[in-house]
Amino acid sequence: MPAGGLPFELGVDAREGLDALTRAIRAEEDGKELRRELAKNMRTSLLPAAAMAKSGIMSMASAGPGTSPALRSSIARKIRPEVKLGGSWSGARIKAFKTKNVRGFPNAPKRTNRARGWRHLVYGRPDTWVTQHGKVRWFDHAMEGVEPNAREAVERAMEDMARRLATRTR
Image (cartoon, rainbow, N blue to C red; front, side):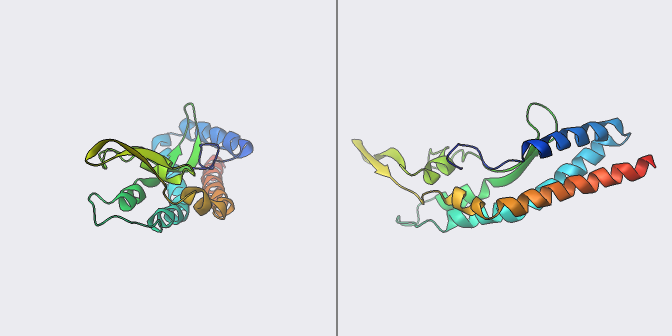
């Protein structure tokens, strides 16, 4: 995730537009289905950005002999687009979710992205701690060139739904 701790998100003006669009969808008879379709279209528009983040973690070097479960692929499986419409937060983002049950390392996505790495005990030596470094800023670097295209694709999905609602009222 970027230095601020949050993945990129829609700007304030787009977020206000998303809130207005969500209110208009709720007013429709089949609002639930329209919201589901808008969320699906927004998630689909973010899939290329998620693929870039997945390739970023998969390019991290692996020094260990085939330990199981594989850390990089476990992190890559947990990278998904997330869309919320309404509530305390509305918007779309790429999120690296926690990796539960992966070597007792639930914060792997955050720690492998961090420049100062993470500390852990050495297996078999209960008093020996080491600092390990992943691929620094793998998530951040993957999102750098993708943000404008992803933002445009999400806004296009919102505009399509707004146009669809507008044609219903005519």
